[in-house]
Amino acid sequence: MRDFFGIDDDFVREVPPGALRADIGIALILVVLSISSLLGYWTIPEITEDTHLPWSIPLIVVAGVMISVRRLFPVWVLLLCTGVHFVAVGSLFPLATQQPGMQVLYFLGLYSAMAWARNREALMLATIVVLLSMTAWVALAFSVFGALQIAELGSSPILLVISQVLVNIAYFGAATWLGRNAWLKARGEAQLMHSRELVEEQSRQLADQAVTGERIRIARELHDSLAHHVSLIGVQTAAARRIMDKKPDDAKKSLVAAEHSARQSVHELRTMLGSLRSDEGGPAASGLESLATLVEDNSTLGLAVDVSVVGETSCLDELSRVQSAALFRITQEALANIRSHSTAAQARVTIRVGERLAEAEIVDDGRPLTGTRGSGLGQLGIRERVAALGGTAEIGSRPERGYRVLVRLPLNGGTRESATA
Image (cartoon, rainbow, N blue to C red; front, side, top):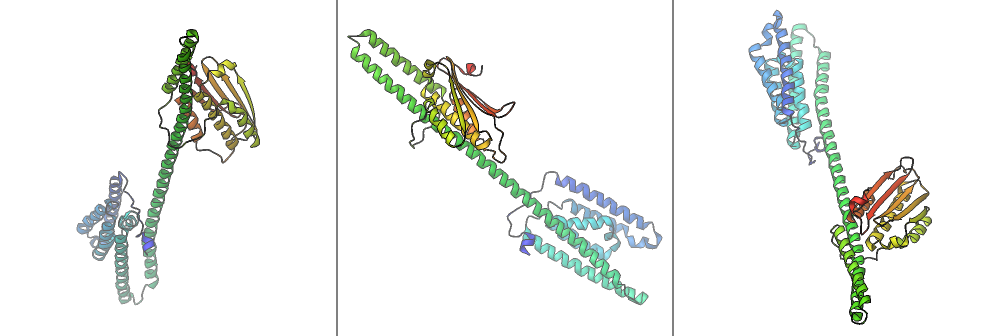
């Protein structure tokens, strides 16, 4: 019984906006139909006196008023409309309760209580009281009717009584069952919505964690680069100090080199997004010099990678440690995505370095694997890393077949505008 009425369930069904207006419209229609039907009986001379219009019409209106707030006060409407009103009016003015519109009003009272009651324990008690009262009333009514028929006709309409009882059981049993199913459906939808919100929240947290992790890795690489530059500045300035008196020209060259290193360090600091470095240590970041190892690792995992570097060696030397590490990490992530989400057996990596731009392009000719849709965090990390260095990223399907990742990073003399050219 407790499970049937959902007494131990914490779910509370909220009344939607506009419910009162809709219920008033429904109640008004049913009241008009009931009064119209009763007026039709009133025109029949044989039963004019049984209509009791002065009392029946106001009582029909009262039932309509109660049904208009059926979703706001479902348990009270069940008790007062389907319970008290049905029994009282049915006893005093039975013709009024027999109108189809009134029968629907009573049906809605029971249905709405099952579908919308917030206090499920009160619902259970009210439903039991109402159903027992209706059962007792129906039994008494048919007993009196049967006795009158026996007195007048000498026989009892037992089949008619049984059919009417079954009709009432089916009618109000359907109201109870349908109302309960409506409540269960609303509860299921609420649970599904909660699950979706939980999944979305967890996805946002994972995305935030991915961004934070990427920024931490960038900060580590920036730390390594700055440590390199600062150490170099220290060596150059120390050398300049020692030879300043004897070899001023060589000392000047050392100071110029130290100035260049300092400017490069400041430039990298200004182009990086601010992020905090974690307390945990980590291995030094790999750069483009590790591409051969990356190709070998992917070959072991079943993906053949062809690497080509376009540009002079002097241009490659212009790449800072952070930029070289970023291009390596992006290439590593792109190849991992190809292995996980594509049918491709081969991939092509092209590194292009000019005077103002450095590019990394990773393409394949495979098709997406079904059922391997990723979280998107890998692409998010690529975009975050590129944006931190003032560059741009183009990630998407190729027009003919396969996938393409293209990132551009401005070099010392470059700008974001040149990266988008």
